[in-house]
Length: 201
Image 1 (cartoon, helix red, strand yellow):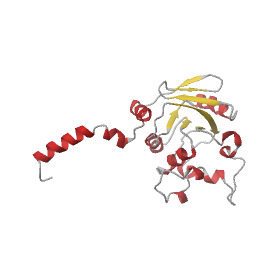
Image 2: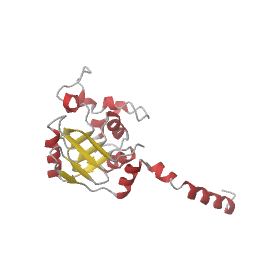
Image 3: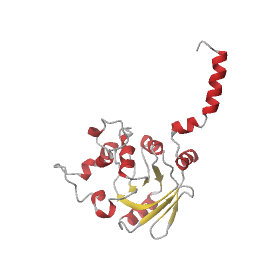
Image 4: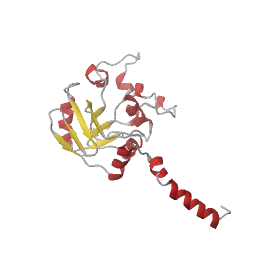
């Protein structure tokens, strides 16, 4: 998994509450088990019209936010089904940070497993960043995971909290398998002892 330390990029405003995983990646795109290729269908029903053309009113289709790497969203982001395809689609599009007042628990944890940083901030601070994101491509934000801060385009610095384990995993580029493999020598030693003590297993 790619390490996450700092990111300076364009933030897209998505001032919607209860954005569920079917809105993030509709069910018809869940046939694949690949983590790549889903970005084109991110927010499919909002990004495209019935004839398949782009909806010019959707934020990620507007020139100022096509290269967004940060998403500023509303309450309860990622609710609905537990599909891991949702963070896959977000990451494949190029978004590496989400900022919202709250998240669905499974989606929140799936973000960390896929190298996405979901930042939780109080409503009033999310509103500050939402307004900043509305300025467009010239209003770049900086997210510093080590310092646990987000710096808005005007220089205002907002601090956020994060679980130390999740923080370490992102900083070191470790998913759950990676953290397990850190203990590979201890696991091998344990298995060797068990093989001698219980050869019938």
